Image (tube, rainbow, N blue to C red; front, side, top):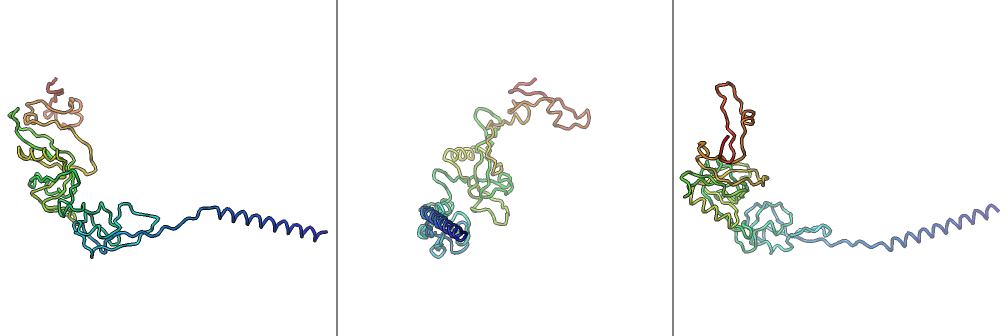
Length: 271
């Protein structure tokens, strides 16, 4: 009797095993087959290239790239890059994007770096106006103009431009790799047509000054002009009121003889 039971158990186990194998095979057959995408081929530098180089056929090669990880905007043919200027340094074998190159037909040099709808305007500076030589391509700055207006005998300093980008410092289109600064007499700014009109008018009517700012600072300040009489205390003072208590708290005074009474100024009047 026992051998018969053992035989029945073995037969049942075999049937269960066959059933499980069949179910697993059906599940695997029903799963979609993942096809491997063929490798893409992109144009890339055949050597390390520097910004400003005009690409030639010898500078380019085709490199294989995984088809599962395509590069948006990459050029698939070296012929699409020949004759165009490289805007950024690139390593050997790095796929070249269309945005890495000057626009086709735009020429080379400074003109190739001007986006559509923008203008390049050169403004003359000296060592002081040029922030002591610390203006380099890529710097962000504000432009102030000091001039005379027909409505007032006072000199007035007005904020002409805010957060303008330096396109070139002299003939330099890229910052010095070693970080060295140099004094230049002409700074070229990237401006809109309206900003270009303001800059040219200001430079012809008075003296312009460049104010260097943090490139990450995109805030905009008020553009109320400052009169010479305001600096001498003879005219209305622009800006928020300064209270006597605030002034005393912020200005250290060592002796009673050095204390000065500071009036509260409100919109040109005083109390």
